[in-house]
Image (cartoon, rainbow, N blue to C red; front, side, top):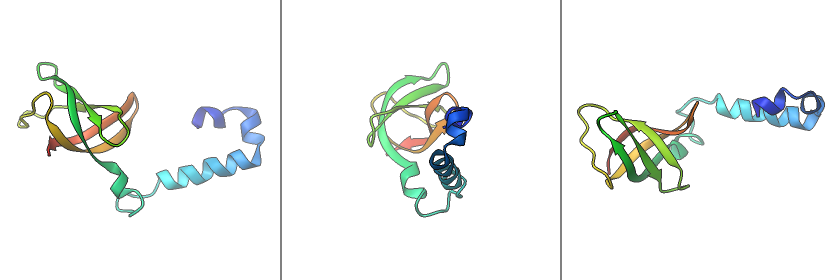
Length: 102
């Protein structure tokens, strides 16, 4: 959306500008907003686990996306574990935070 907003034709289109403003306002809502909180929590299954490199990927049950996550030292996870996590949209793509066994 930010790239589209950079395009002159999109900026000059009143409907597109209003839509962009509405989406930005929704994204700025705090995490305690009821409409945001339920969708940030997820469950899934660990598909890739690279303990030596400190990361893994979990497949989200809701949308099937592979979400990258960092492994914390004190968390014992195994390939195929069912997990809970918080969904994030990171700079490099879908991510998960606070991954724990379900």
